Image (cartoon, rainbow, N blue to C red; front, top):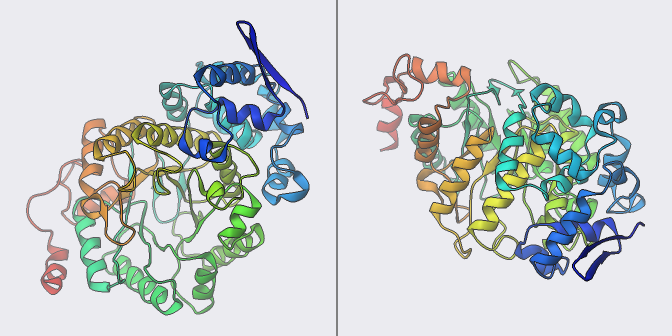
Amino acid sequence: MTAYAHRVGTHTYRYDSLKELMAKASPARSGDYLAGVAAADDEERAAAQLALADVPLKTFLNEVLVPYEQDEVTRLIIDEHDAAAFAPVGHLTVGDFRNWLLSDAADEQSLAALAPGLTPEMVAAVSKLMRNQDLILVAKKCRVVTRFRNTLGLAGRLATRLQPNHPTDDPTGIAASIVDGLMYGSGDAVIGINPASDSIASVMTLLQMLDASIAQYRIPTQSCVLCHVTTTLEAIKRGAPVDLVFQSIAGTEAANASFGVSLNVLDEAHAAALSLRRGTIGDNVMYFETGQGSALSANAHHGVDQQTCEARAYAVARRYRPLLVNTVVGFIGPEYLYDGKQIIRAGLEDHCCGKLLGLPMGCDVCYTNHAEADQNDMDVLLTLLSVAGVNYIMGVPGADDVMLNYQTTSFHDALYVRKVLGLKPAPEFETWLRSVGIFEPGDALRLATGLPQPFRHVLANLS
């Protein structure tokens, strides 16, 4: 391994490995202090960032942070690296790469072509040299479009996941939340339920209910029950109407093992979902969620800082051409992201790094009640991510998930940011919203007055 150093005044800071240098260069966050890998103070952090700026990008192909022989994620990153795509920036240092990304030469087309040539460690490194505005500008240039029953990720669009969770998986309560969300124009990314129970019987019931609702009202969207991937595989074997396969993933083999998954399991699930051919306009069939701190919480981080571990999870996601990926940024808790400032920074980092790697990034703009954060912090992150071109956000009744017990974004929050920035839903969903009377004819940003006819009997039955 190569040693790295940078002199500040009369003091020389030394770093024994690229892994240590990356960790010391990371903006401060509680998880890295918990892991014992963070810089001691701002001076050491700045020195590490200056040293990191001089590291050639090609170094990341020769000095891996997690041993190749011990980790299938590392093997995936190295073995599937596209040398031809990397060639245009292969001569740059990390600092030079930052400057190029911020230049006009880095446009939507060049960034899309470059994505297969970038490794997670490269994008994590360059993000550590960026201010928040840099992360926003670079992410804004990246456009990642995916399709299943509608088109997500187009310019000028912001989709939402309608998240109708219920603490007992009660179908009536879930149905009420679904109707509530649709009335506010939410649900184009996915109607996705986190089940309270991972039992196959409960999951089958929810899948059938979602499928029937989408079919009855001809909603151009997709459904997902966010159970463990092996439960979804069993549901597919039993003939369940599965649109998307969900799984939480992390950036090391050991962390994924703590979730009960491996690349082989994900390969099987991807093939099974493709075999159903349920998409009408595309075949992006996977939905992944990630979050900074997941590898550390499983003691599976190998001494790598949490933001770099998070970026490595995107290599796993990229293998399966997913419809949706989102960082559940503040969900794990203040042990990993202490306050609103750290959550905001992490959300912008994750979004930018994922987009640079070619992923359709969304974000669950969220926090737990024991974090030093509040809804004003979430308003800031929501607005910044929407400016940066985030593909989708969450829509939860009242921004308060009554099953998972955390705070996120509401149906109203999606309306706010769409109005402020002039963003529309997915085009097929927008057309449907107008056709059933939820949005005003010819205006995709204005709710119609009165209750749309197709849903009057639904609300009558629910009441």
